[in-house]
Amino acid sequence: MRPKVFFANFRANPKKNLLDKIRTLYLRAEFDKVFSENDRVAVKVHWGEKGNTTFIPVPFIRTIADEIKKNCQNVFITDTNTLYTGERKNAIENIRTAAYNGFTLESTGSPIIVADGLTGTDSVEVEVGGDYIKKAKIAGSIYHSTAMAVISHFKGHMLFSFGGALKNLGMGCATSAGKQILHSDIKPYVDEETCKGDSICIRHCPVKCISLKENKKAFIDQSRCIGCGECIVVCPHRAIPENWKTSSEPLQCKTAEYALAAVKNKADKVIYFNFLMNITTDCDCCDWSDNRLTPDIGILASKDPVAIDEASVYLFNKAPVSPLSVMEKHAGCEDKLKALRPKIDYTIILRHAERIGLGSRKFELIEIS
Image (cartoon, rainbow, N blue to C red; front, side, top):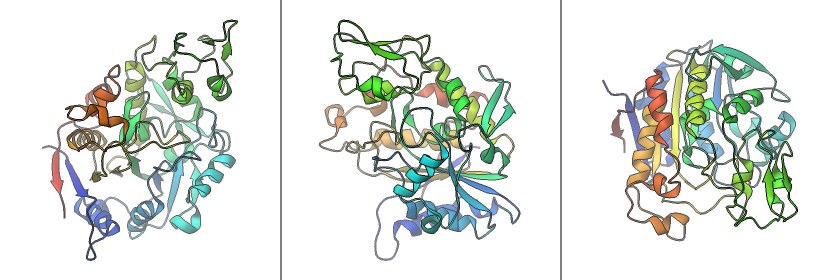
């Protein structure tokens, strides 16, 4: 039987606002039967980098958390520290950024916890036995929670082509060391003809492996590169292309295996929401937000992370293109993700996640009013 994915569009009226629709999705998906009184529920979100404005708004997160609290009170909002430079690389700056973007105990009604601790070292090794990952380094607070609500903002991504539930689980629940393992196969390089030598990539590199050569062109020391992809994102000239010297397949497969590790000890205790709104080309880890690629599409709810991501891709590809966005030149294309990043096969993570038993790419889409 195909897993059910429940869908509500972003239309609202005086009788039913968007928060009402979230509550309806929660009940229609039977999420109210998932949690019990003694559960410790991690609400896994991405509260955005400082300067980003397209992350999921707090009222949506709080509505879901409040519904969970009807069954149990031990609910916390969580994310992990980042591998790259920015405002979320340790718990102090991370919580400060969360508060700047509106995520506080007062606003969400739940404690804000950085799941992998002060410096990203609160880690539990989880046996996976996968093709790429034998043991995954999962954030301690994620592992020690007994249940989880994974609330993901569907958007584009420079390494995966899209980010959704699987990336939120796999990359988002890994410790800093785990993230480095996930990125270890990514080795970007500089296109010297395009490089302007402005050193922006140098300033953003967390391990200082980029330098300027005598010809004023950037050079990446791949023996020291950790593959975080930060340089790819920050270069305004696209001089560090998304066509790496190594395949993106290991990254996607390893992330799927990390996603499996993140939920391995939570059988039937994980729910998923994907928000298809403010869909931009790049991740919420960026400290900026470009114009949305399509109009806001809707909200999805499911107990299957593969199905909800597959349904998100399907709905995104069906949606009309927003004018004045980078998607405008691809109007009419059947596969928007492929048009945006033709070098990345985004189906790899979906196929591998299905193969290892994380979920199904086949789904039944059920629209609610």
